[in-house]
Length: 264
Image (tube, rainbow, N blue to C red):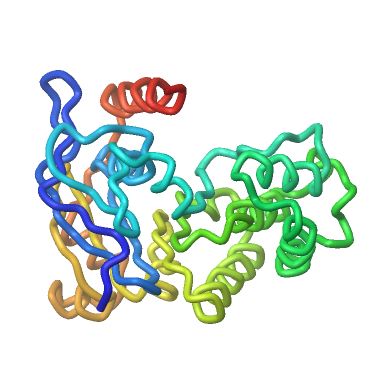
């Protein structure tokens, strides 16, 4: 198997707090990989390091062979991302949001129109291309964000809690789109979710992080067998405990550091 994402001995410290502690994992090309963890476990910090928003304190990361610290532009071209929080411009139409993203990622003009139409058809939004995004439902916005993230033909798609706040029907449709992308285009998907049944259904492999450490990695069936449980949620709780978590100060510090990095 060819590894398209590699993390070796990655650590992230915020002053005297270690948010991510010497973690290592790989993601295979064409794999759907779920990265799961309670609030404050280090999940978001890891994603921000993978997507160039934070610099690791120690360790090395590779995205499609590129170093996100020293080859930021190349690394960013290798992936698309759908953030947990909405990132569309509500005052623009669906098509205008797509065109703006295409310009930012230097999608060649001769293929821009065709690619835009292809993706809006893919997510069933072509008929609404001239509608303002503020008129869209939450599910429609998520579908548009996925289409937008794919404009520049990325090899990796990061999905950070993409179905949060969506109804079950819309969640199922969204994962159908993701599965189709994975099968038809071979795109690698790196996802996070708090809906364990989603990860159980769509992920080829799962890594669980807790207190900054990866505590288990394997297929959903392997993790259930390892913990002698019947569902991935039960396995997750057995590995991470039942205590309610609070993201706390380390998450806020991570957000501040990420904003600084992105402005550079």
